[in-house]
Image (cartoon, rainbow, N blue to C red; front, side, top):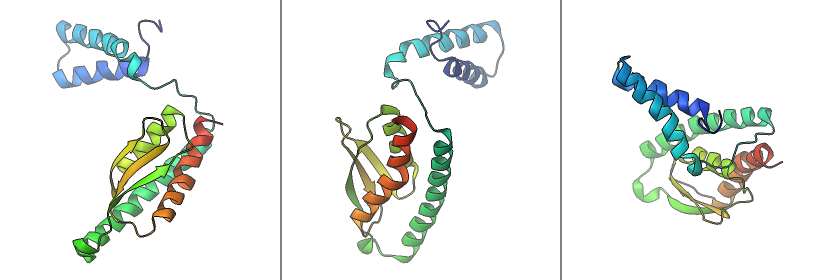
Length: 163
């Protein structure tokens, strides 16, 4: 079974999305949905990171809550800065955050958190996974920003994926 359906949740999602996009339940649509649901996970199997081994689900829930709260706080911060500062007084820059995290799934989650947070428009993880380069909308203290990323996000991700 695992050989033909390496990711049943992905297959189910693809099947459902195909039916919704086509808005039809005729035989041809069902057949093409089934073929896509089987073929896409097989063809993309090598593109997915290593199998997830989440070790501390409570830490993951706390991290998710923290990330959502930080995203809301950041959205308010960015809005306030846009409305109250002139462009010349906004200190946007690229910051290199040195990483200790090495798990590919943890790195992917860290990059997603960073890119979804308002005020961080772009991010890139180095090929050797040693640094995260991130563009920050407005930051006064680069060292404090790096320490915050490591403490709030990297350390919990290391607990979840590496301990």
